[in-house]
Length: 321
Image 1 (cartoon, rainbow, N blue to C red):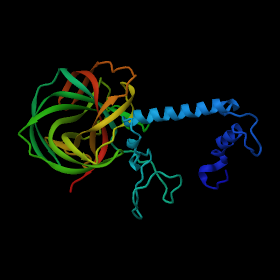
Image 2: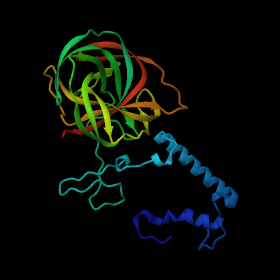
Image 3: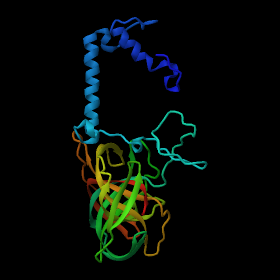
Image 4: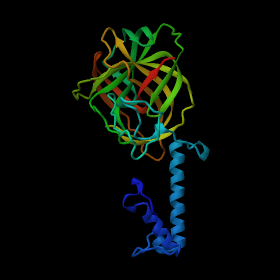
């Protein structure tokens, strides 16, 4: 190969090309001292390549949760490096490229991803009233019981900003809500318009198991979410928190959690939301082992029985029409 692009520095891409030409018995300049693919045997090389293709297809089927090749669709939002314009001008969204004129930078969101586990309160909590004000309105609620414990999670090796800060989520009740608000929600998985409906959970910054934390987090009011457009395409991600590390299928949007002013406590960051998705671990892995946890937050201290993983909550922004 003769290519002057930076992707071909030191001719790395030409190495397998030369090896395959040697297997096929084609003339090459300065041949390798040995042939690698199939140790030089054409049949073995062919079998190795087909095996690699079969494995790649199996991995994609698992990632997208669909055996149909037509549904294995990539979008720019799938790239680990996300593009955004800064300062001088704006440009349309682009796929990741090697050397754009405007250099790429890694932007670490102020809010971590969270993996939320179904949890049942075993002691320490009594129901109480709360006045909750978010960008969708004011809710006079009763905080009923603990429902989930959320750990900061490393998604696909992106890291964790603060592993000591957790969210404990509570079921709430309120007067019947008529909220039916379309909202465009954007995050690493792309942008979709969903119908945001009445709130159902309140998530509160919490310490877990006696580990101190600055708890530099907002409270979040989580609203039911329905009818995302375009339809969300399920995908596989690797999630690692201090409970487990699992390959996990992200199935569908479940709720939008908006920063909320609880009983006059204020909001730190009104722009960053959490969009939570239903998840299921990929088969063939050890099932989650239930465990106990203690938590401390503005409601006091309590104990939880932590059960199966339920949602992945992703830092997001929203735009109202």
